[in-house]
Amino acid sequence: MATITSANAIVMLSIPGLFDVPQQIQGFSADNIYTQDTLEVTQTSMGVDGKLSGGFVFTAVSQTFTLQADSPSNVIFDTWAQNQRLLKDVYVAQGRITLPSIGFLYVQTKGFLVSYPPLPSAAKTLQPRAYQIQWESVVPQPN
Image (cartoon, rainbow, N blue to C red):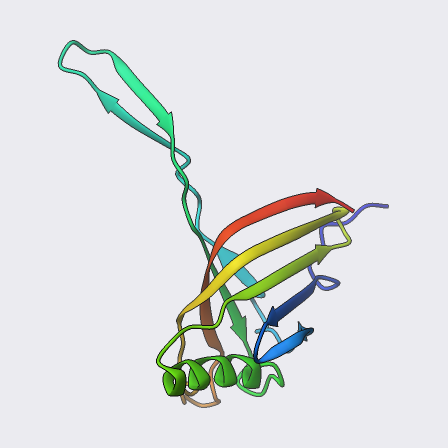
């Protein structure tokens, strides 16, 4: 019986110089593990004569991870952001997402932390924190 559950998803990140050994990201929000933007992989242009031209373009993959306020993995992103601030430079991540329910592994290369909430928002309870990474590439591999 095949399912499409994401409950068994495994997300691993390594950040050379900070976390050389891949770290499993845990403590995702109740409604969301991650999202990513749709890629525009073709640029088109319509000529004045009505002829459409198009060509391939590279596009960074924007991915947002959402973690509960009490996730033990928040410290990974806190450490990443704080060390960049101290260094006044960036650390580059590598990632891997395994989705057993569909039998795929996604390899993520050259990731930059581009959006970081320094603390959780507070309402009736502390709210999830969302971190955005831009990847040079995300490549699917059958598992």
